[in-house]
Length: 135
Image (cartoon, rainbow, N blue to C red; front, side, top):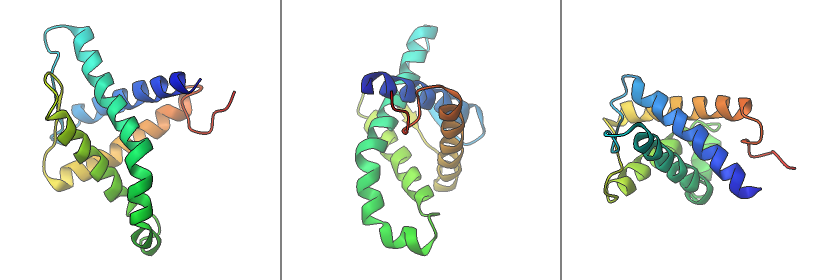
């Protein structure tokens, strides 16, 4: 069941990444341009990487940034989202055929905000995709 939830969250995040690439945030996904299904797999790979980083790195960053999170009443979590997106871009730069390219800090910051909102809305709409779903 965990594998299915990971796959659903990866698909939801991939759709959110696609949505962010359509907006003028200077976020570009490269790879798989020759076939539509390869392009979908590239977005799925980036979505899976973001879900994996959110599961492993985000708790560590949140713990380390706890004083900043408390002082800003949780708004510092947007900076953590930016860091996850930047780390995803850095990791995909080392993978051949899959690359997430980001713009300036502020463009990436707002892209991370929109990505988080769209992913949260989609996770609420897709049955079984949320964190709290237990069967």
